[in-house]
Amino acid sequence: MPDSIKQSCVRIFRDAISEAHPINIEAWGAERLLAEPFETINVDSMTLLDFVMQVEDTYAIELDETAVSECRTLGEFAEIVAAAKDGKATAGA
Image (cartoon, rainbow, N blue to C red; front, side):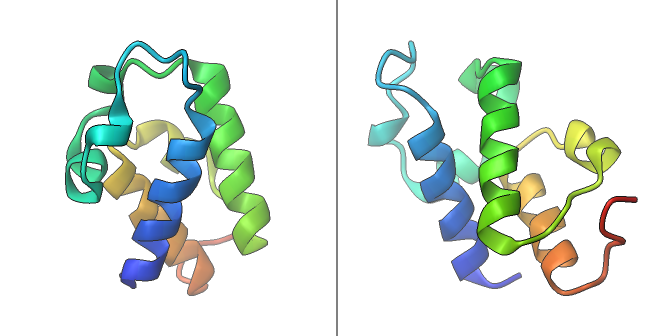
């Protein structure tokens, strides 16, 4: 997977998290953010939905909702973004 997709997902994710978030993820490196489970980061479903929509807009793709809901980390999410961007996943499946 291209590092640019990982880095883009990290950037968009950081932007989607408000400053009021209880965990200061700004101090975390990209590798930790990619590996940390979403449940540990304590991100609410509306924030995650906003994040997913921003990524879909950025890459002009439509991600499979089931695949997205099965992601446990930002790294796993970045993998499905890369697959969709490369045409390996069916858009809107």
